[in-house]
Length: 321
Image (cartoon, rainbow, N blue to C red; front, side, top):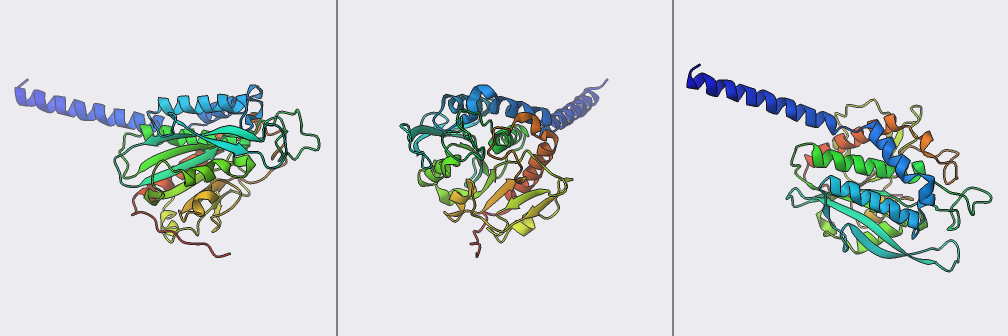
């Protein structure tokens, strides 16, 4: 074989090898129902005792999230490694530990871009029913595992971190991943973050929030809030390829962490599969999660994020009541 033929042959082989490696990488980082279920099984296990703010169980959940962030190569962006500490005040009940130490967990995917997408989900829940908020008539002493609320959202957060850190592409925006604490006590973690941001708020492209995305009902579909918070959202939603049924709502405020960002005039999207009888009950357990449908929801989110990344920094629109 001549030298030129050898070079051509090697080039073809390298191209084929690169193609299949790229294909394999793209395939492996798609949202995976088994990984989603694994995350939820860990976070909603009885041994975490409901992940109440300030509890040992929530600290275990934080360590799990930090370990996953580190595995995906995210840069620590808290003031203490991945942790952003703050004091959470329990407002609903007066107990000796009304002031509790809490931490947001923050990881950064640095693409060298001037602007950043924020992706968030809260990882706290109601603990042993003593902090208030339970729908059970006698909640104290009962483990509220919070599989849907909001281990499902944290699983989505971790899957998006896995995708964007491992898809082989350098996106035109950075991505900041935040697991918020103190949400169940009144959006305390996200409220603290927007007052003590680790990047300037003016550099945020938009914020995507996941709270209860694990109980998909195909008759209802998933609700996507915040559609009215930027004039560009309608064009971002064009050309989606999904079997997931969804509907949109204009509101940017509401009872979850995206509301803290909307109040700072940042466009938001909010994903929620709807209420159910297990909401804020001890029966919100991991075996009731529809992980396959959640994988489809996360894939829908990936499409929306990637569509939005093809646009200039999104303008904010205030939603009229």
